[in-house]
Length: 422
Image (cartoon, rainbow, N blue to C red; front, top):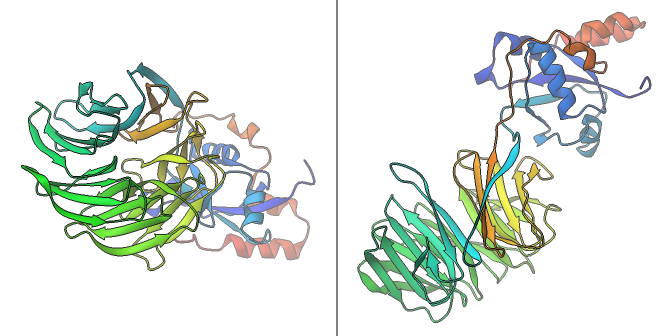
């Protein structure tokens, strides 16, 4: 389109991974249509690098998920300025559902236990079984594992069971008055459990009585996560709390007015929490305000699970009761991808079994496995690629097409601009 608005852009590559080719590209100002999206930018860089590439692109600290023109407008940037585009490795390629395995009852919890040989998938079910073994007199509500041989479970029978994989019982904790909703294994042969009425018990293996009890919340404790000596909890009382694990002393409270908090996960000090409103909230408890962002619009119902992708500080897997299973990036404003989960069944558990494999299960009693491939890159040259680029120009090429000497002087000044530091 001849009258389409053009934007001046400059690509900014990670300096630690820069090459002679990327440094050359980063030193240039180019002109692209404002309608350019991710695929268009991939085509431009594929043409310039003479190989097929697939990147993510970030402008103003947010991933570009539509056209550049829309992105610039949304974040209040001037179309007269040079738009700096950060080129980001990673992203998600093809997503395949590789298997589905029928279980005996609803799947309530999934964990992946690391062993010397293979990673073992362990399932907690509403029929009281853990890994197919009858452990509880009622639904299993929470699982955790430690090392290659310790499994902990808790559920509607108000018991905490910690055992070795050879079925040797290390703890059979009795003390809760109601359903245990969440459980975490801790250091030095300890674990913590929390229940429907907000009580938490701290246990030590070999002692079937709790060594410490505390009222964490005024209502149901929906989830727990332990990060070194810090314990995080979510609750139906609309709060996310941070505790000292050994003493169960309160350190910090974050309130979400009127929102029942249902699940959480922790990744290198950054906590993701889900609520019944379908919104994912991101917290950093090293900051005074704690809450740093939230993601709306991707889930239409209560979130049942959130899980950080291993070795990835940005990507989350989230499941909700509207049958949605989605991938999020904390730098994005909408989901990266949707994983196929059958409707109207609800996923109740979702975890990672490595950076490229996701697992989910729920009310349809099936365990689903998904494989997530990395974006394809090719080193093959493609001399014909330039014909598909839809009219992007190096700044020098544009100068030759402009008639105004004043405009030419302005462009030359911009072209002499040094590569921005990331």
